[in-house]
Image 1 (cartoon, rainbow, N blue to C red):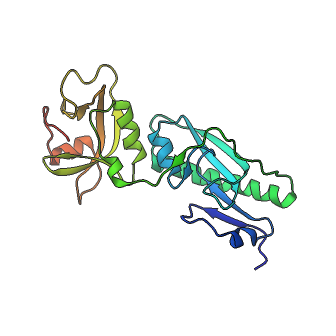
Image 2 (cartoon, one colour; image 1 turned 60 degrees about the vertical axis):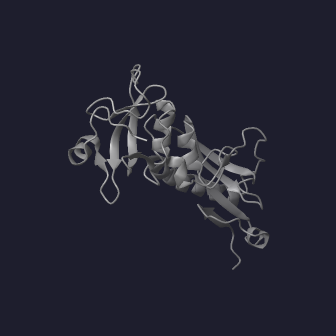
Image 3 (cartoon, rainbow, N blue to C red; image 1 turned 30 degrees about the horizontal axis):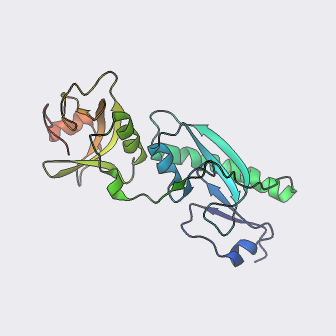
Amino acid sequence: MKADVGVVAAYGLILPRPVLEAPRLGCVNVHASLLPRWRGAAPIHRAVMAGDHASGVTIMQMDAGLDTGPLLLAETVPLAEDVTTGSLHDTLAHLGADVLLRALDGLAAGTLTPRPQPAAGVCAAKKIVESEGRIDWTLAASTLSALVRGFSPWPGAFCLHDGTRLRILMAEVVAGDGAGGVPPGTVMDDSLMVACGMGALRLTQIQRPGRAVLPAESFLRGYPLPTGAVLA
């Protein structure tokens, strides 16, 4: 086809070398992290779950490895405390389009010089497994907040109540001591504050199987979780 360049974004396979070498300027990847941090399949989920304070987009010259190629351009974005995988995905999609165009202009003009990725700071963004979203209430509220936001909107963090699976799409850390000495997983008030191993988490968006995602107040009208109920 005599292509000038190939562009890949969110593509689930490693391109074979003949494809990488076919375009005149090679192939570039729009990657949703600041490489070499979060190489792999789920960089957005992993950044949110890890509580990172920044993320961004990297335009990378592709090689035969998994997100190991030299860097062309990168742009950083700060992460707010309430960021979710869904909101960060949308931010990075728009940013990635802009940075990609700048990178393509630089490649065409010969003004961009690929530079090797740093050896320090490499970490893997493994594919998300749904079972990772099971909430362990013995963990700290801050850790669980990051898990919930990292799994929102898909595949959703979850817990069980009397055998019913509840997807938790949004939650917030409660200021202060929070847990008050009750066992982790215990509902502590009528607005879904739940005790954690350290602190407490207030559930703000919840979903039952086959039902719509609801704010806590609406959810409780159809599915009461009184003070003292235990989530597992």
